Length: 119
Image: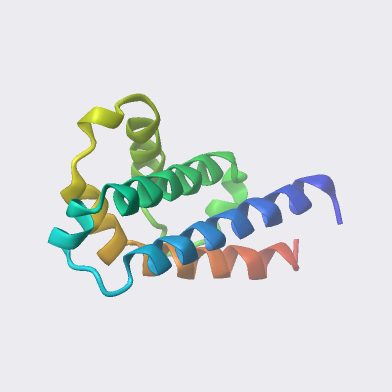
């Protein structure tokens, strides 16, 4: 397997792992409980950062295979906000990501992982 494919596979694995951790950390929580738990908030934000960093490093041709495409630019922008503007992070935005965007991203990751085998 070429290095680029191996690297992309590792990045996809990192995204899958981060999604799993976020789901684990937030299981059974509502928005209020999520925001009230600094430890949970910090853990989720860290994994959102991992997702954004990994997405930014994925090959564009691999991301282009996914239709409909997740909002790649927004995912990376949230990573940048987390990395450079932590005090300004809106818990409601993070909660929205947790509750509405992870499933879409997980489907995209599965599609890209399947495509890696045929590249």
